[in-house]
Image (cartoon, rainbow, N blue to C red; front, side, top):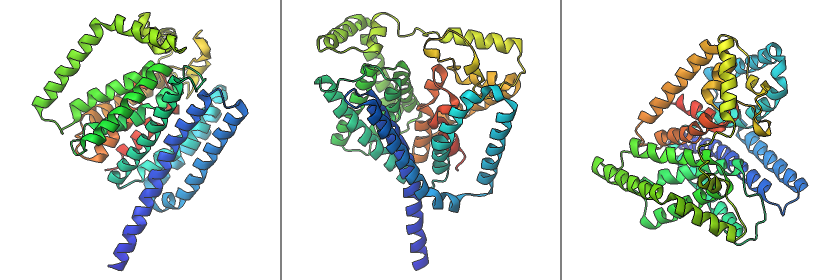
Length: 401
């Protein structure tokens, strides 16, 4: 009995360490984005804060190493060894890509890979889901304070940040998943709703369209996948949403003009709202140019294997020199050719469909859905497979049965 109790305590400690490491990364990314948006912090101090955040994540990772080593099995070791060999071969075979591949490799090895390994080694998903909830509440509370300072005029920072808005997607989706659960008190659900609204408002004020689409995607998926509501209630809520959307569409111009006017009166602006008012919300901002060039290159050499980050070597004329594919499937096919890239694309689509079909009665299924919904819409329109932590964590958690 004593040995069994001791094993339980050790396992609980292991679960706590692994979950804490992932939550530390999520909070660290948010803190870095908040810091870089502010104008009252000097650039040197922003860099210092960023270094402190990275150092803290590294310390937590070292703290987790005994757990990782203890739980690593033969399959995990083989995957790591194969990954190391793949990196060395990639560097040798595709030397032209190394100027971009170095940065990708740095992000992948210092953030994405450790996060994926830790989540893969977690057994207690109920506890992990609770840790994700606490992290989401913390980030959303800080964002609420940040937004309040912004509206009071005591902020004085940037008015557009793709990174900041995307850092709010996962915490917002976590809170939305809570809102769909019937086991929460009304007051608790009200607090969560307030935090959800302030997060979405921050995304609207500070940018980016992809983050809004990701949250909308998750809400729709929750209505499809959730079994907490019976069919009649689902239909009622869908009808209410459709009516609400219809009202927004009919009076969209007046509502948007009013919102922009209010922001202008207090000396602020919103890129997202301005795009909506100017009917530019669906503009591609040069993405079609990139996709056209990529498709033409693929047509010319459909079986060519160009390697990771090969899309960034193209000169497409896209603004800010952001010459990456901006699409998961085009990125795969251009990098690995029509055979390997096409097979990987089909494999991803199959994984997406399986995740959408899952029943979110338990926390493990909910976590899978959260990770997928926090990266999939963004990777179709923007972002890169190799720099998206939630994609690789989703792939890692899918292996755990």
